Amino acid sequence: MNKSNKDLPTEASKETMTSVRDRIDAIDDQILLLLKERLLCAKSIGRLKNKVKRAKWDPLRERQIFERLSALNNGAFPTEPLHSIFREIITTCRLSQKAVTVGYLGPEATFSHLAGVKYFGQSAKFIPSETIEDIFHDVEHGRITYGIVPVENSIEGSVTSTLDSFIKYRVKISGEANLAIKHNLVNYSGAMEDIKTVVSHSQPLAQCRQWLRKNLANIPCQTVFSTGVAAQMAQKDHSTAAIASSLAIKTYDLQVVAQGVEDYRGNTTRFLLIGQKSLPKSGKDKTSILLSLPDRPGALNNALNILAEHGINLTKIESRPVKGEVGKYMFFIDILGHIDDKIVSQAADRLREICTSFEWLGSYPQVDETN
Image (cartoon, rainbow, N blue to C red):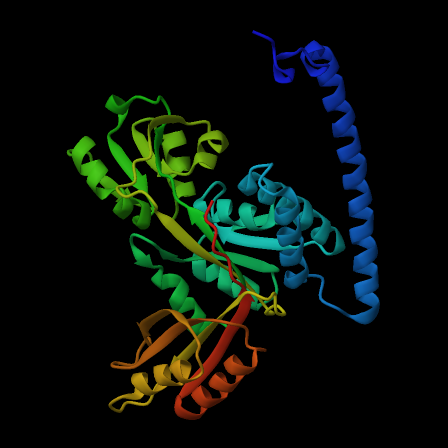
């Protein structure tokens, strides 16, 4: 039987490992030169924006870059890593125009820290805070540029300390990020028999309740301020195990006792980026508002009807009691669209007329991916 063309030896099959590695080195050299050139271009853009007093952050431009690259790639390079690589490049170039500080619920290696790195890459200066309220306070007073705060989890629901802080402090939402939560049980030795206590933040403990009951039924659990604090405790006390992030394993030199100890797969936490300003339109946005309503029948229904009449999609509504005022509630509402969109602006004007208080918390690029 005759061989087809595809069975014949090709030049590629004659390549040696050395020759392929030489090609890779040459490609890496080109990538580095282009990255340096891109950084210089970004700095030039920054100087031009300064002259006309334009914001450094242009979410519409960034969305257009990702859409163009995805179309050009056509699936040849895995999409998620491609976006991750270019997010790091774009953020690094943007931060070369203006350095930013990002506060997160510390200490180092918490899930909030991971969310901040996902949003800004490694280029920002990350500053740990002891509480979520501290982050809001420091953003409001200009001590940090941004804060990254958890707002809801797909298993345990809303993070009430974040919602309550929106009532107390005047900040704007500048972005959001969805982070897939993978919990690890870690300790100093990696041996389950060494565990006398399990520590973590209240949310991870709740998210791993069934696993802990099944596998460590007689071991007490202790709530601490964050998964980072839990990892620190496990590092110092070898009888303590922590439920913590993958970043904590390397940061605190711990060993994995068990991976994926969360009770439900698809566990995702939504984080909000808070700052002193909101962002211009990106073309695919979300708007958050905070309002209170008069104490009369149908007041909430009237507010929701306004959104429906304008064809606005409501994606979240949450009520929180006002501290010190029995029976009074604030409502957090997320809708699709930007405050500068005509229908959103018109609906906001009508809501202001019927609400006892109305605050626009911010409009920001909507994200729908989780990684």
